[in-house]
Every structure is written in structure tokens, then in C-alpha cells.
Amino acid sequence: MLNAIANAHVQLAKAHVYLADGNVPKPTRNAPGELTGKVNTVLGILAWAGTAAGVAGVLITGAMMAISMRRGEGSEHMGRLGMVLGGCVLVATAGPVVTFVFA
Image (cartoon, rainbow, N blue to C red; front, side, top):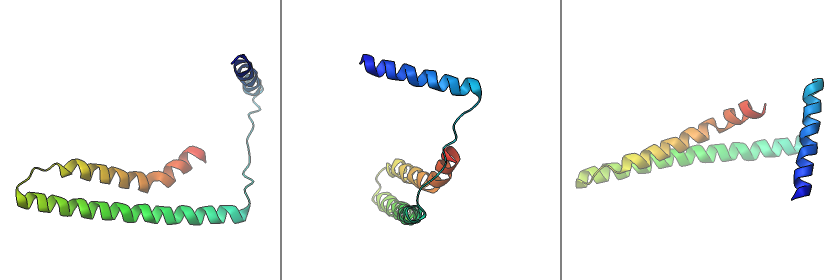
């Protein structure tokens, strides 16, 4: 435990030196082009799958709401629709949010 605290103190002292000098390190991106191409392909497929799942979720929730209204049941599906739409928003904004934070 004491070693961890001592290491944290050393790292904070190094960070203070960087901030005091104004020499904040800027790491560069050195991932191989082949890897980034494959990762972009997988992320694109996942984005399309997330979009398809969102559309399917809205359609299924709408169908369930229609059936429930026909039977005279309450509209507890509105909460489910809100969750599906929230998931759609997360899927749609995942790329831009990560780009904004890490770029």
C-alpha cells in the first residue's frame, strides 16, 4: 500500500514538473494502418447492427403498444419506448462523442 502511495506521489511530482515547464507531452498515433482499417470495419459493422437493432426495437415496441391498446391494457410500453429511443440516441452519437473526447 505504501509503495502505491509513493508511486502516485512520484507520478504527481512528474506531472507538476510538466505543467510548470509548459512541456506537456503529446503522444502520437502509431497504430499500423492494417489494424486501423480492420478496427474501422468492425466498428462500422457494429454501428449498422446497432442501428438495425434500434429500428427493430422501435417497431416491436410500437406493435406491442398497438396490441395492448386494442386489448384495453395500460400504456406501460411508453417507458420501454423511451429506453429504446435512448439506446438509439446512444448508438447514433457514440462515434461523434468519442471523436470529440479523444481527438
